[in-house]
Amino acid sequence: MKTLIQHGVVIPMTKENLAVVTDVGIDGKHIAFVGPAPKGWKADKTIDAAGCIVMPTLVNAHTHLSMELMRNYKDQAPNLMAWLNEIFPIEDKLSKEDILWASRLGVCELLQCGCTLFNDMYFEEEQTERAVNEGGMRASIGMTLVGDLTETKKRLSEKPKRFQEEMEKSDGRIHLAVAPHAIYTCSGETYQYAHDWAKEHGSLLHTHLSETKGEVEDCLKAHGKTPFDYLDSLGYFKDTKHLLAHGVHLTDGELGEMRGMNISVANNPTSNCKLASGMARVGKMLSMGINVCLGTDGSSSNNNQNMFEEMHVASLVSTALTGDIASLPPYKVLEMATINGAEALGFGDVIGTLEAGKEADLLILNTRNTHMTPLNDPFSALVYSAQSSDVDTVFCQGKLVLEKGKVLGIDENEAMQGTLRCWKDILSR
Image (cartoon, rainbow, N blue to C red):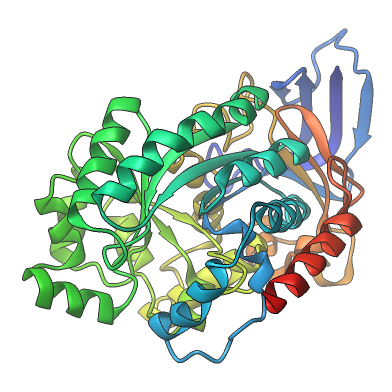
């Protein structure tokens, strides 16, 4: 199948502030060209993208997708730990069916905001994998770990086998990660075992770290070290690839140490604001050469999966935090939401930019609306003006997964109704 996308404002994310009205060709699952169509190249399908932006799809680098169930629930908790104390009892009640329907709803929401890759940390992970394959998108699925070494060994012996069937269906769209939840829910032995397993299997390690002042203070009392230094003392960061969620309270010294390690930080500004956790020093991290990507966190602490909203908040918060309007310009925000996220999750060689030879994960966004007129600067428009509802078309691996705003692989209404049925049942358990 060959597809030609014509007349759009193409933002390939290969060079700062590069935007040009041109064509993009898709051949099978790959991008054939970015630029004028070669002479004699014949498309099976042609899309007129005049009045639209054509760009790489977005990457949600940290979320808990099936927490869609708890959207707008217990929103008045004063801080992270108080909120978790309300959420953990609900999570203890969840079934495989609950996770599946909520994951389907989350996949629909992500595709509708132009996101084809997310990094997940939750339970009954094979149910989320199933929803990912139904929607035709990508995911880094974390084998979530909590508790002591005995529980960890059990989980890591069982989970990969359960994941195998859905992974084989994905044609490389699903990667397996190891996700020890946090230092306050996992033992040191769990982190060490997770590290060794990830190193042996070449997997990403994904954990929450230094999200709140309380977490840092408790770690200092318990171990005499900050969370980062505590994990470093366990050998957790040695010879492995890492994604640290939040990183709000990382010190200058810790950031300096990270520069020599294979570590990315997922910034979650909306969740951090909502839970009064503080704000990560994103501009500082980027200036030090640390790869920073962008995530929504779960829909119970955000309360959505809208990456356009997340870009907007990330930019505004950085300006407010630093007093410097140029601390996080729009192009850098777009990098966080595209290629930086793809690199962090191990997909950077296949997606994140529009280049010939890469797999065709791209979105077409309609700018012919009141809030995007006049366009003037397309980068500013995407970060400050665009809405997820502007996303018209999404390709993943060269296949249409969203057309005219409609998810093709999952029935959106069924996903909503299924999630509502599950939530009603959860509340009665």
